[in-house]
Image (tube, rainbow, N blue to C red; front, side, top):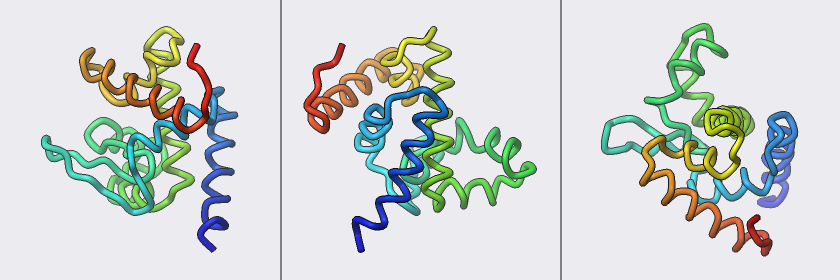
Length: 142
């Protein structure tokens, strides 16, 4: 039963990776570092929340997501980001793609920017995700 629940999430992850041209292993590593899960909302020190499996920040993204996908209904956007794992992964991967673009196509700098645009926090996050990538996939990082 537990494994069968993961299959749809994995399919969403593979689809989001393909659509955004990002390796699925990178997305998996971010999800692992973020520690998110279905229905999770974590309140931050600045009173924003990180939602769902990819821990999408409400302060940075809720307004845009609600405008683009929910006719500006931020309550609905909040609930879907928190409770629809597939939608959360699609949006999280789109955010990652935007972050990579903002970093002139640099994958790892984009990974850091997914977490923060502050240099110190970016670098720390890149280090965490790289370490998780190596641990999960036993691959060297180029």
